[in-house]
Length: 464
Image (cartoon, rainbow, N blue to C red; front, side, top):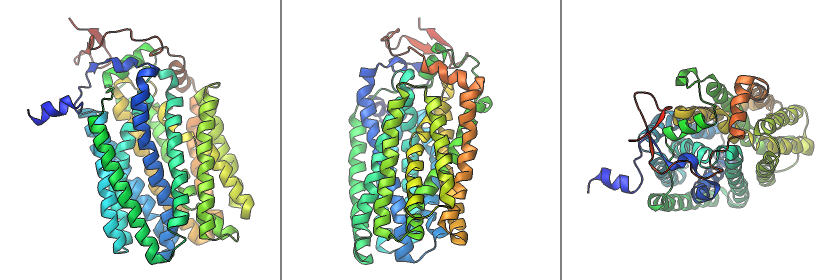
């Protein structure tokens, strides 16, 4: 048996031109794959939260300024476009979601193992290279996991699904700073570096074992043809324009770039803000960051609950407006007042990233996999905005530097306005919100339909 036959048996190769029952997965059928993929959301939440804590830790032990320490965020998020528009996107289109999950976990584990050597040498540049490898792994996971959760199950609940899964991402961001406050800041520099090595070894072992679990698990593949079927059923993709004419997609990617940059900048310099504007030390600042991330996680669950009663686009518009309203005063406020405002801002940040993903993918049909790569790749903002914020903080203090993420939140707000008030955006979002696909069982037998490649992936026809 050759590699291709083995890969097909393990579900690692799937044709995008075949429409499957996955286009109409019911709630019950989607539970196992959603639970398995949701573990990945915790993983990159933990990694992201660990990064924010290490940012301040490396400032202390390596005596580097805030602008240079943001190189961690630049390496981490700078890897995302390489994954989401490059290697992970290619694997996703040619092999499928499951292959990308395994590939991303492998890169994550490899980067974590290499990070141990960089930490031993106390090499900040070497550690940034390892973070870049980890970022490629996590970028691969996000390239597959975000759209997979969005489309795995009835379209009516896609925003609720992705926000619920992303809530476990929020839990990961809470656990990491708490761990950091006890493992990094509570010891001398030598012992702290040794502790960081054990953390990354544990991460490597866990993710590589998880890759094996994915290899032997049976999860439904969702093809481009499936998404074309859903778009046709909801009457949201009847125009079926070429990818380069999907202006709603590129606006969503722009909003994701701006929003993610602002979110990462706030979290990355949260400890600096607390220490500089009050009498708290680094240990307390790390614990307060965990509290801020807890506020973020609570916001995710609250957002999911609200979406049961209100349209997701309304909730998104309200929460992004809340980010702007509560980050603005932190530029001039100080002490516990400023920190409390950051807490509220982080609460409202909670649902923005996943909801932009879900709304931006609406109506893309056969372009869903490629389109999701642009939205996930837009987290490049997390590599661009923190250095700007760090430079502003070095020049004017971290308090005034919060004007930088404020400006990017305002830019992202343009998408929230369009998706709520511009019919070309609003109608597509609402078409999926009221869809009945996956709620009434399967209308078609497994393998009963395929796609005529000459007519395009949007045209579904019976197989003779």
